Amino acid sequence: MTRYFAAGIAALMIAGGAAAQDTSVVYPFEGSFEDAAFSVESAIIGKGLVIDYVSHTGEMLSRTAADVGSGVELFSEADIFVFCSAVLSRKVMEADPMNIAHCPYGIFVAERAGEVMVGYRTYPAGPMQEVQALLDEIALKAVGD
Image (cartoon, rainbow, N blue to C red; front, side):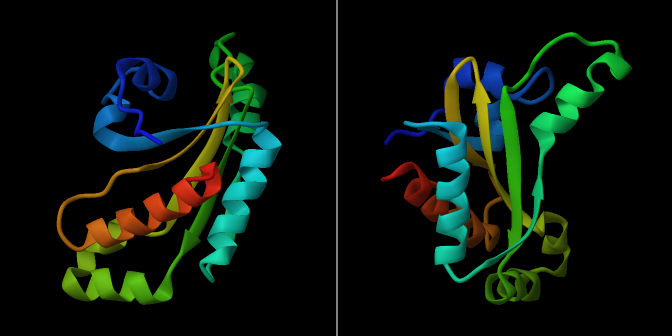
């Protein structure tokens, strides 16, 4: 499975601001949004981690569109699974306590224009690359690689 850093995915994921290629890794998912969400949840739990919260970002964006003067549908559905790893978080924060800014971690599932995707934000060089490797492992497991 190749990483999607293409301009097309960047346009899908970011409306203005930094390009997705600078801030996220996105993988396509062959199947429904519901299947992708279940797969991400299972992959996180399968690593022995606990999901703290599921942010229903797609629902919030749909619900508030009119309130902010927009008629644009960004996603058919979009959820972000928020979790942490006590072992890994302690390790990266012992290396630099300011790595607290990157915790908790999240993996998103989104559907746009009939395309389902799984992804996560990228992290800076150094100790946080170990967190990024964990997120990549979970995302790849979820998409079936």
